[in-house]
Image (cartoon, rainbow, N blue to C red; front, side, top):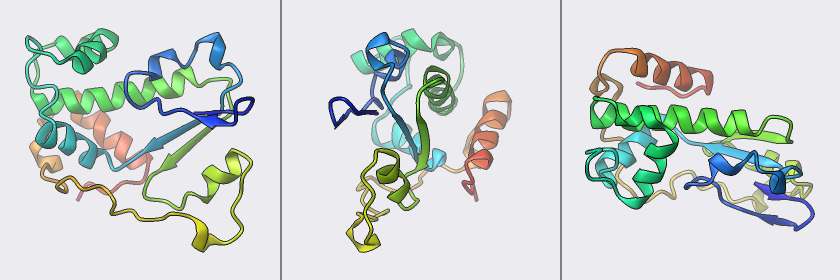
Length: 167
C-alpha cells in the first residue's frame, strides 16, 4: 500500500488486509501483489505447517481464522490453505474499492508499480527483477493433491484468472 501524503509504503500481507477500509487509509494507493497460488499454498503447508489443526492455532493463524471463520470447518490442511488464499485476496479486492488499485503478479516486471506510485524508472536495468529470490523449496504440492470440490474449483479459477499455469 502506498500513502502518497507520507511517501511511504506499508506491507499489508500479514494480518492487515482487513483494515483496508479504515478511514485513515482513504487516500492510500493499494498495490496488491500476488504470486503463483500453488507455490503460496505449498509454502503455507510444507514450509510453515499453517492451517493444520484449528484446535492448536498460532497467534497469526487465530487472527486469520477469526476473519475467515469458514477455516474452522472440517477440511484438509491443503483446502484450508487454498481457502485462505482465496478469501484473503477477495478481502483485499473488496476493501480496496474506491481507492487507486493495482494488481501485480510478482513474476512480472515491476515497472508498473513504480509508475503507479509516480516514480517510474526509465532504465529497465535499474529495476530489481529476480523472480527466483524466494529461498523456500519450490512447489512440493501439485493441483492433483488438492481434493476435488468447491475450494479446488475456485482455486483453479483464481489461477486461470491471473494467468498461472497449474501444470
